[in-house]
Length: 235
Ligand SMILES: [Zn+2]
Ligand SMILES: [Zn+2]
Image 1: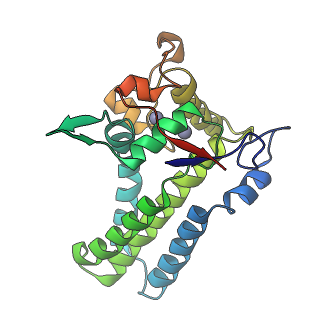
Image 2: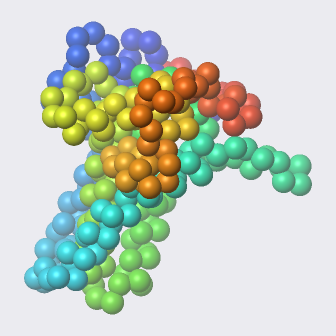
């Protein structure tokens, strides 16, 4: 069951447009923000204590940035918009996908827009176990973990603030906001990236909005993927 915010909840951007400061103050009230900020602090200290930064660290950092648009695209297309299927009498579906379907139904509920905390913690533990085994040195493992925390925090913050009423002034930031809002309010089959859109550009889901028809299921993803309506609890 998904817990959603009541109509008058502080987890909804109501009233006059929020400032960036207002959005940041609300963001840090969510435990995911603390988990990610804590991970960023721990990995920054770990990397700082592991010696000087060299070219190999920059290559690792660049690889994480280069992969991020594709990570966002792949997870959004194949997991968040997952079409539940029955295998041997059992329905295969994911909490992540159920939650994302509700996020499409009620994009104004800032709390539902966060990653499920259990998924965030499990993914973090997976990275913490994997990178020391995959990297040839401790310092590169710390660099990789620092990048995991950084891209995770940037993703969670960007997605959060897009769903508030903050009005960005910078043209590049305005475009990032516009693409994700088009995904929610025009057509859920386009604009699958959140922080970066190279995945959309290369994989055919970045279109001129005037050439994209409005989708009747952009706010009803359950119908689009043939899923049962999600049970929700209002808090
Ligand atoms: Zn969203
Ligand atoms: Zn979506």
